[in-house]
Length: 330
Image (cartoon, rainbow, N blue to C red; front, side, top):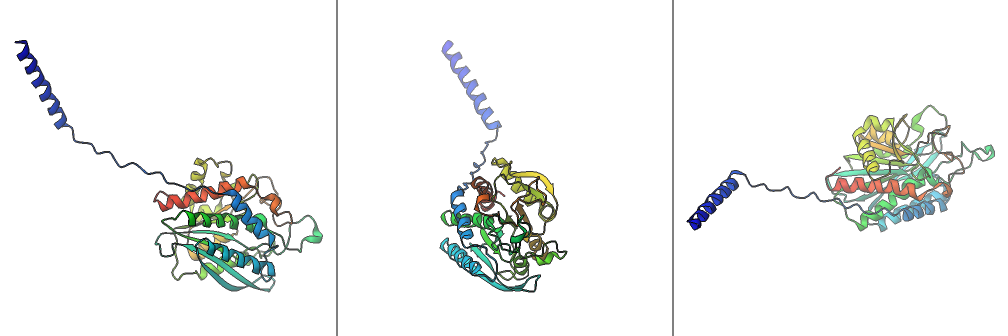
């Protein structure tokens, strides 16, 4: 009897078990989200690329230092596996001087449909118009931060891409003749001559990109990158994503949410003429009269102002952006 009751109970439990299993649909878990592997940005390497530029002296168009720096930049990008185009043009300065200028374009995956532009200017200012020593205000400056830092970061980005292939088209564009503008002048088009030329004459016919990021003065200690007005007007979503990504990586002391006034910089003409939404990562201190670093357009803009931690904050942020973009996550 007890044996029969035992088997009867077992049959009832089994029936309930299978009935229960049939009543619930089989759940297939979603595939795990793969983490995006972002290479490490080597700040020491970027620092050396800046020092190498500065060693040529002021990189002002029509000078031997400018020509030597151009050759060095093109050769180095080629050694990093990029397809390099030297876009030569003659720019007319506000003084009437004809400037022999060259935009340098280093491309990765040139046939890829999805593209991103990373840019900086590689020339340095022809005068030190804000130098406290008035006797030296007509001399050109070294431009370690103003020009050199952005280029140095992008050179290290290029070296990293070569070692860590990316599923994305990346165009590194170094604009020339950016800093030959008229101080206190009303005509904004005296500035950024290289980006104006490239925006009207892209290196590839019909060129387009999803977005662009401009680097300008991105190497000084304690830099403060604000949300500048032109960037907010033309590419607010890109700016917000970049800032949020950087803040989540622990660089919120550099990438702050403060809004600052519009700037005449290369991104202005890329946005307006080329129609590519481009943001500007640029140092805007809160405690200087000019709104730029104390060394801005002075002879103090040398290697002493460059800080490796700032270079890492900017470079690591850019690497995160492009490798996230490559993985469809940005």
